[in-house]
Length: 189
Image (cartoon, rainbow, N blue to C red; front, side, top):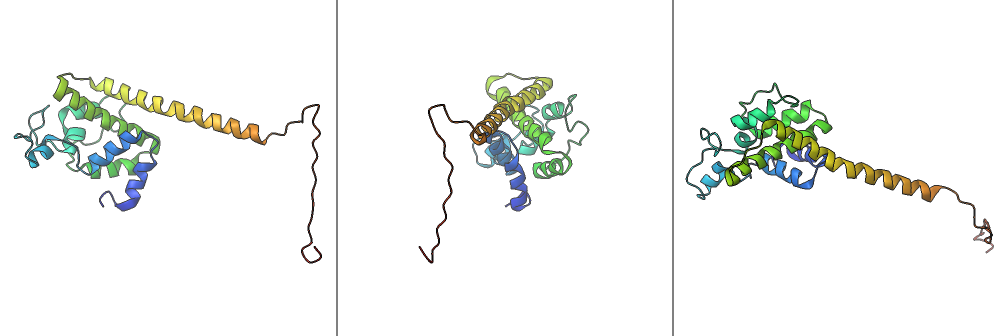
């Protein structure tokens, strides 16, 4: 089952992020991303090297964590894992360490940064464009805010509706409101 069984996956699913980001992290942790290494194993491409650095076998861990272009993002000012070692070879271990050390709010940002790094990689591969590391972090922070804002306003709206339903309102002038209570004795009917 990987990622420490159900407990580890439950932590991922509890993150308040977009479903597409949760699925992306799940695919990353299961090494299901269409990296050059995975495509090479399936005989789709004939070169398993990273399309950006062209030095390493491209795995999910390399693309998201240890490729020099990913390291630039993680080392950027304001990164939550700025001083972490980038030489890990198993993304599952890195994720587990993050979950143990960081709070849920920080993990939301980490998951979104991971996806932004992957999208940046794809933009380079397919469009020959490249986003700066600083812009990746800014984009991820905006993504968090853009997702959280409707969530909080929706929650406030629900709370307001519940309060309005509970408050007592006096009846209109032409309406008489009667409260009554009745009891029923089952033995004597």
